[in-house]
Length: 469
Length: 168
Image (cartoon, rainbow over all chains, first blue to last red; front, side, top):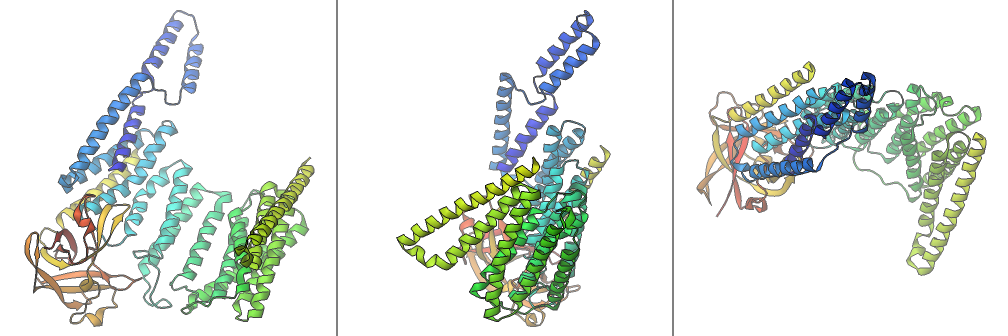
């Protein structure tokens, strides 16, 4: 009921705004004064127009007089009263009345949207958002009224289908980004939970897979691709690549026909997908300097996770599906190909930097292959090399930031170093933290670390400043 | 202006059509009473509800059920048993599953209920696993064995729960 109250309140305020409740009497009096001044040749027609335009620009926000506030409070009280009456008698309101009420409200919202199409964004945008969410409200109302249970994903899928034309008509990026986000949530949650999009199977492989769930998943991907192209062109393809990487990795982890029941292959696929996320969008970038930070952070995260191989590897239960294994091969080969061919000159003009970045990325992919073994000695080596690689990557970030990128790269490099040193300190000397002396040593270590890293950070940022000057 | 109104018309047709179907689809339906276990409440989208588990429907064990219990859809035959329960609305006879089929029964006037397989946890779902209640309703705190469900089954073998009745 609280939701309906808020909706009524928003509708009331919007209608008030649409009907010109903004200090109308004052603006009319001002206009009348200018008209009279023009008639008496005090000001010219052009001056009258300029003054009115200036007034409208200065008072485009909502300006409410004391009387208007009282009117708003009176209106709110009436709305609150109506809401309470509806809430109190909700069980007595029959299904046809609820349907009629909903359709009426839907019509008001959509009509408000249509009538404000060429109006100020501050008026039109709320109507657009309201209409976007209204089908979901209707589905929820019907489900409650007719005791509909069953598929928990279908209502959200139907909502996004019904709302898609609103997204397509919209001129606002917010709604496009929100739609993309909702599609991503629907994919990641729906594919692994009960319902029409469930891709999980009881047995390894395709036996028992639901073709319709795959079809609908494909449709969601098409919608996501179209929305991404429409609202986030050029340098934002990394969002879609990132979503694809997370989605594929979730298929590898979940009990889907792509399940990988081997920790090593999960490491290989994670690093390969992170490399694809970080570098593949470079092919579609036109402007130099649009770095893909989300992909970079995920790639660093996958190397960081390999530093824990020192503690051994936990064998997974369940077999590996052939489709999953072939997909992991494809991801790995694609990641190597992208690492070798990515147009890194868009990141750095210096050839030595390009070679260094390429070599580090390929090293991470080769390092992931070491996790395919079950030999403890090799896994120890893999952990050691992952630490070394992470230090190298942090060094490259700091150096790159000092030479080309700026503060963010330097900060990220310092953060990686800090995280790595703290993790290893706790790893090695964690047992000491049970004693008072241990805490003193840890405090001194972290203090020294913070001081040193801050010094490194400042030095490189200063170097960057000097380069610019 | 034309496109938003066309879109509105489509949405209105969708909601009126769906509403009309929901209002009429259970007009000539059979009423049955089923034993149920309430499990837990709440849904962000639709409000307060009691989640219900129909053990005998979820994993049916009657004649022919073992042979079809891996199919995506199942049809279970319901028959009034001799078991009765004293409720706040009088004595009610409980219905039980007597048979399972992997295909829709043709030309039968008996009560058959269609279930959909739950892939991730096994068993079948019939669309009657939730019952929405007002916030203050005492049945929200119902425990196993204290309520039975009043369910309508239409000619398309779909079910709709219409009441949750407390036992005495």
